[in-house]
Amino acid sequence: GDGAAGGVAAEALAAALAAVEAREQELGRLDAVAADGDHGRGMVRGLRAAVTAAQGAQPGDTAAAVGQALLLSGTALADAAGGASGALYGLLLTEIGGGILDAGDAPVTTELLAPAVDAAFHAVGELGGGAVGEKTMLDALAPFRDVLLGHADAGTPLATAWAEAARSATSAARATADIPAKRGRAARLGERGQGHADPGATSLALMASAVAGVLND
Ligand code: ADP
Ligand code: MG
Ligand code: MG
Image 1: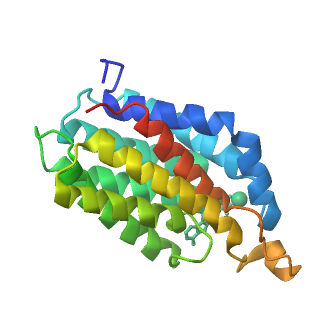
Image 2: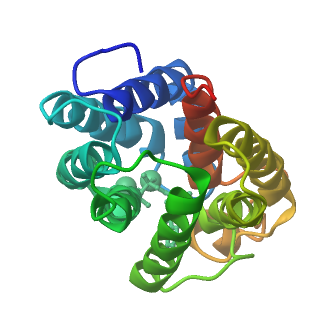
C-alpha cells in the first residue's frame, strides 16, 4: 500500500468501488434480465459503506490489520447493500477477514489468503443454499478460489496469484451467459436468461480484477 487511510484493504475496496461505479448501469441491466435490476445500485451502496469502514480501521498491511478491516467492511457492506448479494458479499468479506486475522503481524501471502477464500466460498454456498453451475456469483468465485489454492501450494507471490485468479473469474463470469436461468422472470418466460451473464458473477470478477490492480509483489 501507499499509506492511504486504512491501509491496503481500504485501497483494494476503493478500487473495487470505482470499477463497480463505472459499470453500475450494466450490472443493473444484467440483473433486470432475470430479476429486479438493483444489483449495480446495491453494490455501489454496499461498497461505499465498506470503503468508509475500512478507512476507519487501524491502517496497515499485516494479516491482523487487513483482517480487521475486512471484518468491519463486510459488516458495513451487508448492512448498506441489503438484498441477497449484500448478505453474501458481506459474508465473503467477513469470512476472509476472520480467516486471516489470527496470523497477526504476518504479511498477507497467497498461502494465508487462499484457505480463507476457500472457507469464504463454502460459507457463501451454505448461506445461499446454492452450488456451482447455477448461474450465481459462486460460478466466478469457484475458479478464483481454485487458482489461488493452486498458487498457495506453489508459493506464488500474492499479486501474481491474485491477477491470474481474477482472469479466471472473468472468463467464468462471461461463461455464465451460457447457463440457463433457474429462477425468476427469465426462467418463467422460457427465456432462461441465456446470452446474459449473471450480475453477481460479473461484479465479483470486476472487483477481483480491480483489486489485482492495487497489489504489487
Ligand atoms: P437481490 O437478488 O436481492 O436483488 P442483487 O440483485 O444485488 O440481490 O444480487 C443478485 C446476485 O446475487 C445474483 O446475480 C447472484 O450472483 C447472487 N445471488 C443471489 N442469490 C444467490 C444465492 N442464493 N447464492 C449465490 N449467489 C446468489
Ligand atoms: Mg437484484
Ligand atoms: Mg433486490
